[in-house]
Amino acid sequence: MIVARLALQSLRNRWITVLLTILSISVSVMLLLGVEKVRSGARDSFAGTVSGADLVIGARSGAMQLLLYSVFRIGNATNNVTWRSYEDIVSRPQVAWAIPLSLGDSHRGFRVIGTTPDYFEHFQYRGGQALTFAAGARFDDLFDVVLGSDVASRLGYSIGDKITVAHGAGSLGPQHDDLPFRVSGILSRTGTPVDKSLHVSLKAIEAIHVDWRSGSRIPGQVTPADRLRQMSLPTRAITAAIIGLKSRLQVIGFQRGVNEYRAEPLSAVLPGVALQEMWGLVATAETALLGVSAMVVVTSMLGLSAMILSTLNERRREIAILRSLGARPGTVAGLLVGEATLLTVAGIAIGTAALYAVLMVARPLVDRQFGVDIGIQPPSTTDALLLLAILIGGIAAGFLPACRAYRMSLADGMMVRT
Image 1: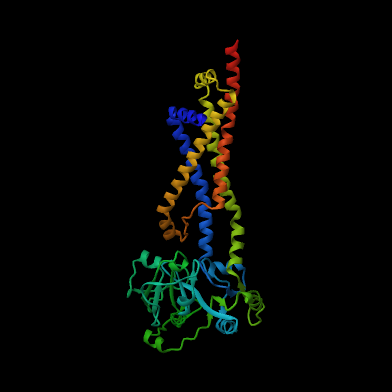
Image 2: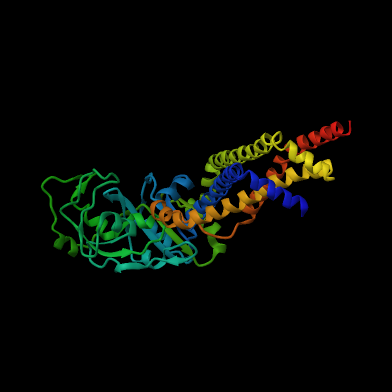
């Protein structure tokens, strides 16, 4: 207790330097824990993009590529899946539900997805949450469109507005301007790629391409919307499908059956396994980022040690007085280690509190901008280990000036005796 009181009093006498040192430690703690929070939040958000799905089926390709274009709307499919094959697969007794997806068109940079009403009934995200409507309802008419929340908010759309779809994924592609869609519903925010998507029926995808061949409009051919509503418009192909099975025990066998499907080359991937493959690819970048954060912490610890060392000559008289009052050299060394420990504890406490304050403010902004939900939860085991490592580093940083002070106190003691 006496050593702690002496350490506090000594630090109070150098409060400007002490505050700057605590600030340095706090910033390094915020950076290290912040990187870990963002990393874990990104993983959880990606994993929660689609929940409850057992398999994703598409044309033969890599598992990660199939997951990226079908679930995250990144990239394009190598080929389509014929509707006949899709119906054959989903009619098997193991299938509980299925969501067909048809991608290819866009609207002002946002993907247009052709699907069925099963999408709104069975699609789940982030631990089994179902899609809900902030306004309106699912598509009913052939030319109804349901918007994700980001599409509606960024483009300023509301129920009843008319929009046109562009042919292809590019925003500058030819327009299906002769067949405008009416906004029938706007989905509530999910923090997933659903927010950045427009949803129409599979028949609508076929309808807007009736007068198109090989990616361009047939000259002079224009089919009115009323006539298209009377046509059967059978679906010929889809891009991918999300499937839920009646039992998880059937997943591996069902996946093998799809991968060996003879009618056409298909792939069936487990979303969790494909995500693990993706995290394996970015693990090097994550490690590098954590390494940079760790070096910032090491730098702050070196700054702590340098700050205490730089004051030793100024405090030589203080140390001499302590020795004259009976303090042993070990007590003097313990005083400096105690100061380093107090500074480190203060830096950890302030840095952790500041990080959670920043997360509370930035969480909705990051979620809205990037679709990443950074959970505000108590420090995890990993966080506790990182903080413990910083504390040990701070204590270790005090040993160098403590050894120096120990030797100085011994030398001054010998001079006094002579």
